[in-house]
Length: 211
Ligand SMILES: N[C@@H](CCC(=O)N[C@@H](CS)C(=O)NCC(=O)O)C(=O)O
Image 1 (cartoon, helix red, strand yellow):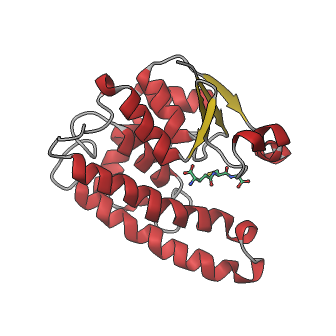
Image 2 (cartoon, helix red, strand yellow):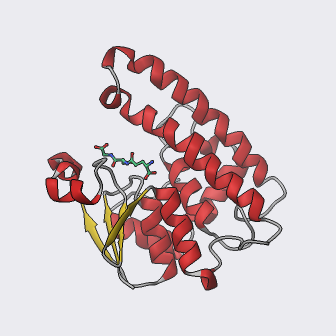
């Protein structure tokens, strides 16, 4: 079993990088310089035709989509307990949460950061405005999931949903209404930020910890 992660610091590859560090499995990490448009290099486009990160090459085959990759890692390393297994009472809520993060929050984040690049610049303000309302609408839902006092989204230990959720929340840090405005999420982010794997991720990606 070999893993090679193509990443760019602080981007959608972060959740996968974090999960790999937490798992403690051997992997190679190859950084792409977006300023040099390395994600558009022909060799990388052969691995990931969308020219985006992350790409995780598993035993020679490339796979993309951050949510799918953290779910896959949870499945491939069941002993690590990164996800409630099939049949677990929390499984349905976990699937719901993963799809919510991947299907609602993540595309809105893409629109927030890439409205000018992905669409016509003339319409970018309207796209960003809709994205902003979707992003701000997601935080109360995640805060509610933590309102019973649980430390992480699915129990006493962090897992796939947490790496994805905390990554998305981190991206709101320069928005007018960041996720950390919600007390439950501020406390949650402090717990995620206190993990040794987060410190290691920040060291490897040269990120400033937040919050
Ligand atoms: N839905 C994808 C989104 C991937 C994505 O948009 N990645 C961004 C970084 S956050 C990227 O590679 N941007 C480079 C580009 O679009 O040129 C995922 O979650 O993996």
